Image (cartoon, rainbow, N blue to C red; front, side, top):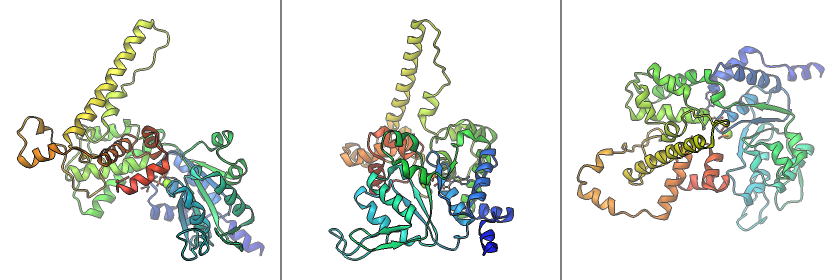
Length: 403
Ligand SMILES: Nc1ncnc2c1ncn2[C@@H]1O[C@H](COP(=O)(O)OP(=O)(O)OP(=O)(O)O)[C@@H](O)[C@H]1O
Ligand SMILES: [Mg+2]
């Protein structure tokens, strides 16, 4: 018995970690990533709850997968639930299942994600999006390992390890009364902080080469590579959408440039205009005369305006068609044709010119723009659009946007 317990708690050996790293494709050599993987190694053999914190696209799900793959539960299911993507009214039945007739439309009984994950690990992504009432039920299942299906009365048992993730400051949400303190402490037994990519730049070249190699092999593309100055640009860029944004960029630029060598100038066209116009490193001086400060603020405002105009120009010239940058691989869209202004548009083009965009088209375009500007960071995009993250998820699905 003691031997079995010891075996259960034995940390995976280094070879096992390497195998899992390779299988999941976890790339990087920054001290931050190495530290994360050491923690993963330590917590994996136990059933302790883990909370993974980090901006969107930093690799939280990958870390959760690594915990599962290195745990004794590895042959059991790994179930991912994105609390932000499920409509609020459906969360409880999705998580805990429902009995026949529990609500209109519940024509049969249905198992929830917890039952489906029995014996394995459940990954609760975007836990900060979970409604307060659901949090109560979640706490109950974490403490008693028992739950009741929606519309049911029989308590059921499950054996599930919980790994949760968030890109929000849950501590702050607790202070504001938006997240239950007891659940916070329960989930937070071990905390893993995944830093944004801009804080571990040494991982960038490795990730770029890895994604390029992988993508070219999968799609049989003969790629000539990135020049050094293109790589420098990738080191300078702040990657608001983190690794996800970098992966999308690498793939789309390779497709759009047909595998030709990519230099800094080419690459620049695929990065948000705003980055190059709005973020010259102008420190805000505090000890200068107000006149000088005012001039500087006006200058900044002009730079912002210039960036907005450049974006509008692209929007108009692109005729409300998705622009070439940040495309999901394989989406065949022609690059924006800047010559359109000078040349006489052919008949078909004229007809297209007459096309007045519908509200829906404009909405789709705006959502795309916001996601592009935030580098795929849904929280930031939702803030820019002044809508909830949940609504944003719904719209992304509705418009099949490649984010
Ligand atoms: N260290 C890494 N090595 C290789 N790929 C990575 C790494 N980190 C992240 N990725 C890739 O980046 C993408 C985003 O990662 P992941 O889904 O794990 O992020 P996330 O933090 O869960 O994002 P979100 O908050 O938006 O859910 C995935 O395609 C993942 O495979
Ligand atoms: Mg995720």
